[in-house]
Image (tube, rainbow, N blue to C red; front, side, top):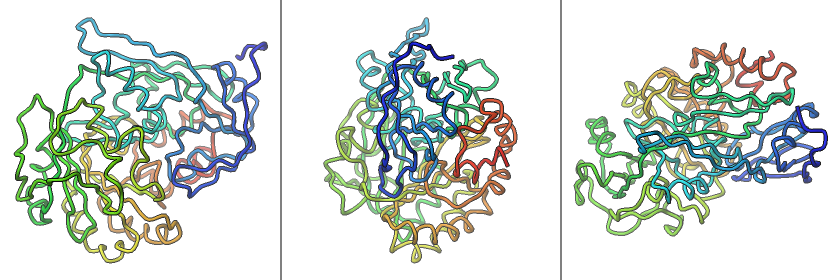
Length: 432
């Protein structure tokens, strides 16, 4: 339990808005604790409490009526546990650390993560708790790197889950339902470099005929489309693996200038293209750490379908191109390797991720989503937990075989329902 002599936590007034600006958090207080003891004190004394990360979720997953806790000021230190071979190991970090800061600890030591998301501005805990991912046929989501968690439960107790703990596969993608994660451990490996080439003019016919070969052509492949046509393909190849042809890619031609996936956005905020080699953390993200990622004022949705249904799912969505056109900024197609994490969108097998970036018109976007979800429903499409969707708990239970087990885990960590909120009531319904 908390130390009775611990300093009072720092608090701030609400409102706070999320990154996209489509949500104002309703909490009465925002706490910025400086120690784990302060986190324990806040949690144990609050009727309803949620962790607030980088605010990059597009829904109310972190919303609550009472207390929000930001771990930006929490410094539990960064601890490396290197494997005897020296080729990899585990790194423990504070619960509020962002990927952009973590890479500054890893890269100078010659370490790397297997993958990164499109932007490095997000917290490690927030990204892994929602199943966020990068791209690559053989690359699991960011959550698959998690090797340990330290969580403050609703009674204020600090619980440690290491890589061998039986609860860890259920706790990694936790949606904030189990508690406040004060420390997290990730597996790292030896550093590597990549180059990113952008290709224009790939046809839908060629992509669907050669979908597996396109996705497997490099370490990370992103296909961008407006569903009428494919606008570009980003091909990120490791420099220590066979190179991708510089001028031609399945009939597409190489771009000769840096190219943004959103035509009206500034290329200055993108990581380097044109085949210029760079370290893993300089090429795996689409966006640079020091710049506003993507467009800023936007909404995002994402759905994951089993790889075996990828072509059929694309055919269904192409039929909705006209309906999407007024709202769609771009759509990105990426592959993610399957895993065994209970609530991971890739649990049970390899998936194709269909990522939609919308204009910030939430009413019209939400009106359109049921049509998209209906088109993808025959393929068992799972939504990204941190983005905008309308699928409810009843349907989600059919998509996640371990959801009943996760509900049991929630009730064990949070028997009084301190971490539940409207989002979790709609999606998990652990206390229904």
